[in-house]
Image 1 (cartoon, rainbow, N blue to C red):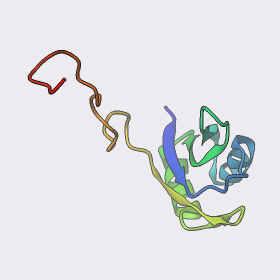
Image 2 (image 1 turned 180 degrees about the vertical axis):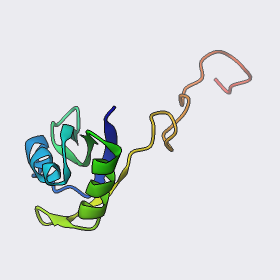
Image 3 (image 1 turned 45 degrees about the vertical axis):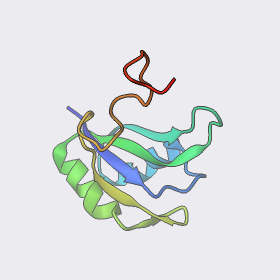
Image 4 (image 1 turned 45 degrees about the horizontal axis):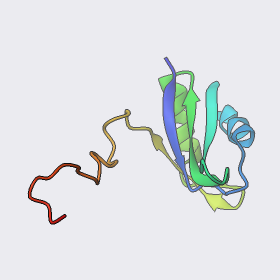
Length: 102
């Protein structure tokens, strides 16, 4: 099972291939993805790397957290499982006529 890392503080010029190349120094990289804006295709400044083992993931955090890559200081930590983050929940629109003004 791969162990996912959150990588923050990426330079907007850092590619997924560059991310893979850098993190390969800490062990086996299963995948490396720079998150991009779906409308513009531009990097959003963060990404995810999946390391092959927990030991390699820990080594990558120790090696790269706080290090400068492509002119930016990285924040590297174990990714939180999906669904446990501080993301938005629910929608902002409620349809129907439950005492609304309109």
